[in-house]
Length: 247
Ligand code: C5P
Image 1 (tube, rainbow, N blue to C red):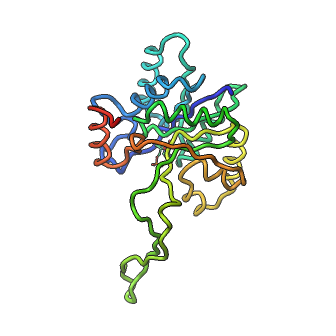
Image 2: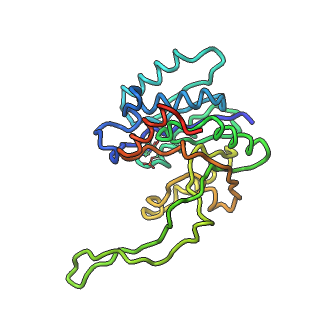
């Protein structure tokens, strides 16, 4: 299928604590966004790459412009859009700007800048084999519990209380790129526009919107190298991976 990649890079990156958008934070001396773009192009998975950037960020826009000049002939069409207030808004904005004739789309987090090529290929191969939606995932190493906040009688915060323990062997930590038949993802994002504030805040990936349509979401094996660079610790791990990836 004619495939595009949507690269979402419009997050604020507050949790990294640099005071600049995460996509601009240096990793091995170069912005995270540049690593992410190189990874997509090296994997050779899309005829278009559309990057959602923080609105009005001329520095990141220039970075994409400069990268376009680096691209050899035959590279993907590289475009940008302004991202939105939420990740889903950023995805929607990019989906609305894909070239006509696009049949499938991979949605990828710029923060997963070190995703190995083989993960992209597993997702693309699964789509080519007929999956409508496919996500890369890895087993969960921690025991995962659900909790509720509680307040003491005096109204002060009390410790959270556990409400349950999910069976670990059924859990997967989900990554990107997530691949979709484009019309299905458009339908899923359209439906999400009707969500209330609480539902909107609970949207953390694209596959969950497709799940709500009742469409089966296939799972392929991801990679621990696809970590989402979110905290200062992640940045240290990512720097280490650049020195020498784990086999
Ligand atoms: O904040 P979160 O961990 O969900 O971010 C995941 C990815 O989504 C990041 O690459 C971030 O740049 C992107 N994002 C976005 N627009 C937003 C929020 C996050 O493109 N409004």
